[in-house]
Structures are given as C-alpha cells and as structure tokens.
Image: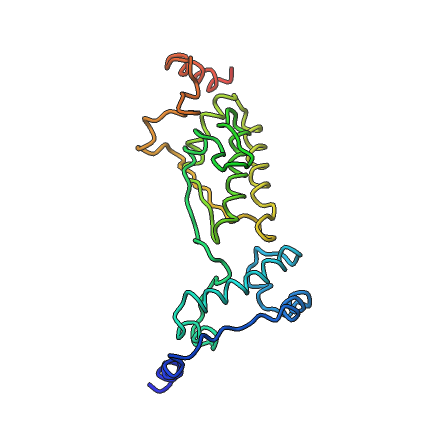
Length: 237
C-alpha cells in the first residue's frame, strides 16, 4: 500500500506550486543528439539519424514541455517528469491517425488550398497513384500517426480497366507507388500509411460508378459497350 501511495503523496505536495516548467538548454539538446546520447534518437525505428531528425528532436522537446506545462494538470506533468508514469508521443501537438475518402480524392483531385499547387481529378491509373502518394505524404506532416485509404483495389479497378493495363504494368505501377510511400518525408520519417484492400466489392459500393468532377469516368460508353470491353479483356483480345 505504501509503494502505491508514495507517488500520489508526492504529487499532492506539489499542488499549488508554480508549473515545473523546464527551460531547454539549446546547446545540450543539440550536443546530445549529435553525440547520440539522447535516448529519443532510437525511440522510433522510422526516424533516421539526420539533420531533419535533429530538427524534429529539438522541436519535439519544446512541444513536449508545452503539453506538460499548458495542457496537462500540474500533478500529471510532474508525475511524467518524475517517472511515476509515462505519457507517450508528447512531441506532436496534433491528432494521431486519420482515414480519408479515396472516392473524394479521385473525384475532386488534390486541391483546395489557396496559393498552393493543385491537381485535377486523375484520368489514368498512374495519375491516381501519384495523387494518392502526394496526398498521403503531405497529410502525414499534419498528423502524428498513420494516414489511411480504404477500398484501394475497388476504387482503382476502373482506372486499370480504362487504361487496359496488363498484370506486369499494374505490378510495376504499384511497385513505384509503394516506393514513393517509403521515401523519407516528415522530419526524416517515411510516411506512416495504411492501405486496405477489399478483394471483393463491398455491398455499399456495388451500385456506385467512378467519377471525375461528378461525371462518369466512362462517359459516352453505355453498359453494353463496357461489358463488351470487359469480355474482350478477359479473353485477352
């Protein structure tokens, strides 16, 4: 009972005291990173030892102190600093993971931020993969955790069909997509991404059709013509 109560008593004694804010020693912070003495260097296997990693390390300490001094109650911040408990991932002042609508991206294109580069809706398979990679790479800089797309195969199948791609061409494009997703971006990290496959088309998507700017991706082709193209593809014609 004593062992459990000890940290609680110590925290209670600090109530009413000024926030135990810790000024950051800039010189020591940089030296600890450069020398490899800071344990945070190896805290995340997705972060490499680099200049970008140094920037992230220094900024992370500032943000962590903000959490402990301005967001958490004084006793909570003190408990973390004294090792009575550990609050993980204090170095980001943002949300953790997020899932995004792939249908919206493919229909609208990657845009909407004034004064920034934008893209119209993709019309081809490689264009769609390129916008997805850019989207995930940029959005992961605004979040602390993974960025996700669902129904990857279902939403991209129409582009494969429209481009009449072979298995080898599809594999090559996907390989390039996976490579692009693993290029370090956020403060020396590779984007943390999740891609979900349906394998079979979900019930809620079966009556939908692919669109670009709310127009049918295969405008001008009736159902019979589309089915005929599908049969020819199955026969390898």
